[in-house]
Length: 206
Image (cartoon, rainbow, N blue to C red):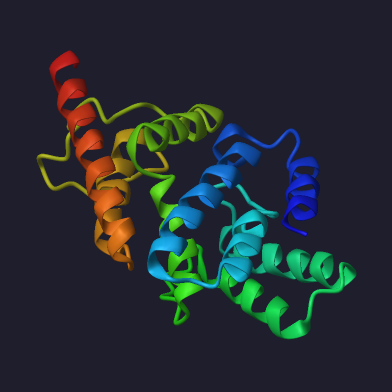
């Protein structure tokens, strides 16, 4: 069943931007698998939710951005109903999807929901997180950094719709504090250190 969902997801996401494409889904899937097995999650629920968590993604800055998770869950429910999944499992899978989004500021109550949220946020960190950040920024023609205060020394208001590096300070370098599971906390700390090293190197080069 997971193989069928994976193949349908792959086809559904063809042509998607590199920050939210099928490879993103599979990285989240692998993160969730690693974390979930260590933390004792229901893997059937977790892995299905991981494959289906980003079926719908609206552009950053869109008025619909906060609807991405709900619309993904609605689409996932239709897919799962069509494949004969029991309703109680569908409800658990869709709950994980609805609560995983960073923009919704929700804390899932189920372990599977917590693990999916951790797994998705981990893909915003480390080397791949840097790559995804600049990929999105390039597609939106966003400047790399504020030339007057690149590294937020003045305490000015951060604007990651205008400056890419502001997104590091506004969100990415803070994500490690939002992790729920012990496994994800360790992974987030390692990836955050790499990003901090990147910022230091960027400072030297600028």
